[in-house]
Image (cartoon, rainbow, N blue to C red; front, side, top):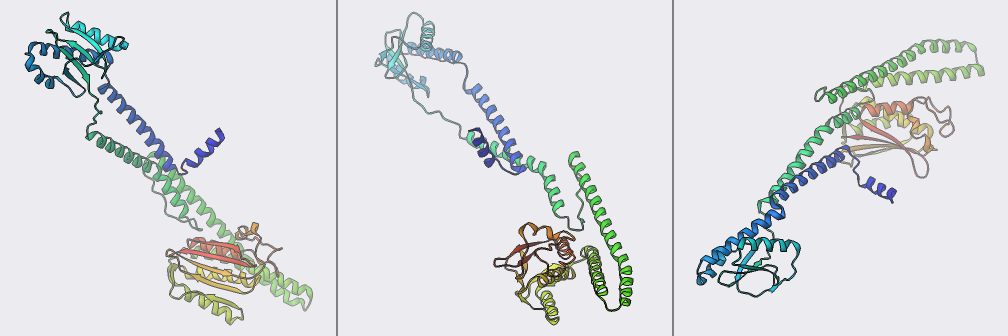
Length: 436
């Protein structure tokens, strides 16, 4: 039972810190407010029974004394003056005497008899209503009957209570908003970091804890960005320095004559040259993509690229509406498309490029093929540098393992997303999504 209750509570409990703090704070303030209101109301509207009964009996004794002093024919006019919203006086004897009233009524009856004196007699009535029967000095009967009256609440009380609740809710919202706003800014700053780890620093102001957290985040961002730049510089330096020995080795291989060893050596050198170029491209595009972007005709850019492939004897199809523009870095986007199309042509067939601009806030570009696809457990790993799947997508060497890594880095720098998915019937689909 307890486990079931915990599961139900976990489903009902909100998953955001803002809502949790709001509920806790508002519930605490509401409970304290209601408790205070109840205590004040109890103190004002609920005095002790003994004090209230004594006041009530004194008022009855005063009314009886007044009726004793006026003439019998004037008494009916005085009854209306002496009556109150909760009880009234009636001349006559129409009730049933209660021989054994409750303990509290017995005490009130004894107190009333003492206040009236020996000239008056008082009894407790049972029917029709629980009241008192009093004999005036001349022996005339006087009944005191309670009046059933609904408790009346002041018309301004519900409105005042509603205003207080609204004030509590508003102040709770303001307090929780101020408390969670630094977390929201921290989340936005973290999400705004591109692949180059360059972003606007957080303002280091506000309360001491918030200022310290912002300072630590900015310092962490600078350290990570510096380390990333250092690694890219190392990769670029190694790639540049490798070009010279590779060129010398290719020249020396030309003197080996026609042999299998020469052919294999030239193949290895070609693979090394491709790897070096890919490394340089990764370093160069990572820096250049941060430059100023411009509005680019997406259809024209991809159509010119498809025409270049067609002129080179490659077969692929292109579908997309004209006039679609996007704010981007055109050369970086072109490099992304080249890597994805090359990947589709190398490992698949029936390659198709399509543009979908039907969404009001985004554009989708897909590059699909009918190749062997990628096993599901490798769909995310293929974006890692130098990661290759020899068993599933290998026709020749499996590539250098940098094409998709470069595409992913560039897409991230352009504030987009790149995902891969296997197609029904075989093949792979690369999906690029950009916000307008």
